[in-house]
Length: 188
Image 1: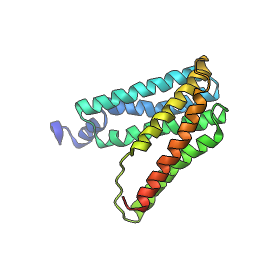
Image 2 (image 1 turned 30 degrees about the horizontal axis):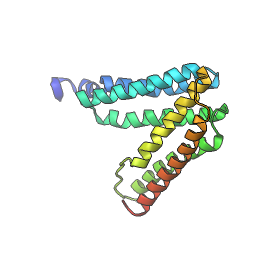
Image 3 (image 1 turned 45 degrees about the vertical axis):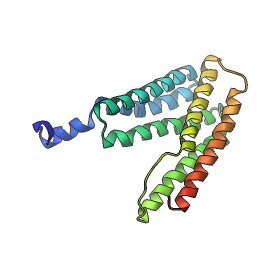
Image 4 (image 1 turned 60 degrees about the horizontal axis):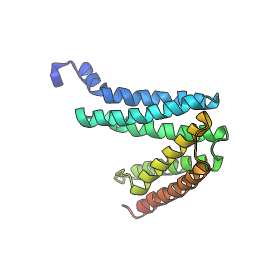
């Protein structure tokens, strides 16, 4: 065992590091963000969303600088996706985003995760490689949430920007989902 620690302490030492603590904190912030939107504390939800973005950058930097681990590599995208999906569902629930868009975003993610599970059960090797269109989709999803929270919480915004971002999220979500399905069907 590393550092001569007993097995249980060595395992804990590997799991508990600054990057993982920050990631876990971001995951724990998801229900708080959900609640803030539901009780119309959109300004606080915006600030929490920005803090989550900063913490994502910080835990990524810490993991690269000091070495990450498998737990952090799994927990980080789960925390990110949990926050994005929760914000889409919650903002649609309060009428700040169209319900059809939240359904589309969630369906795409379920389609991808479901496809991975089916392939794994069938014994196919599953390699998860984010596509360029998927990265673009994530960026416009984040921008739309940020703009929606900023406008709703502080009244700042550019007229029509949320509408343009809504259509960009729709287009990139459809393109990303279709690309993943296409690649899976071709065995790529």
